[in-house]
View 1 (tube, rainbow, N blue to C red):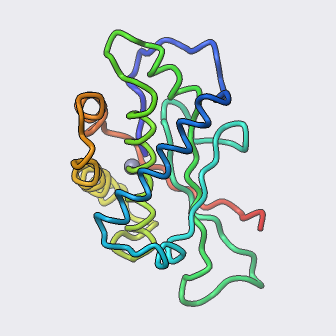
View 2 (cartoon, protein in one colour; view 1 turned 60 degrees about the vertical axis):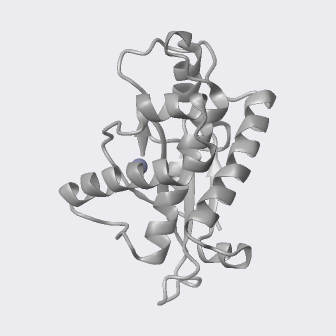
Length: 189
Ligand SMILES: [Zn+2]
């Protein structure tokens, strides 16, 4: 989970338009590629970490001021499997918080590197939950430790593309404390 800075002014827009959706698509492709290389996950093994990305126009997001979070979708009883496979993680983005951060031009944060950081951060959570490195449900203090670890890993994943615009995001948000709230959601599938 990742949050915007407190005190950022409200954006006049609340959901991504077509241009932002295109940036999100590009950021997601790059984030998957970099995360896969970092963890040496061949393309054929990505299905072990099934996840989907939803913006506010597609469903509820995390509570403000979070940029994004990951929720585990619980399969219906008929689809539940003992081995945990079949679980689905949903990355939920908060368009309005992201737009606010970008429109606050003073700190120089741009949309694409911010989306790249956010999606990479959440994908690292997904890989760690999916592989069992991190328990999805953990005591509060363990969640804070996990957040710090995920921030550090995210910086490592992004190192190959860390130009000035990515470094700016890392500088501002790369160790932002967030309150990890990880609800289970009933899957619609
Ligand atoms: Zn996080």
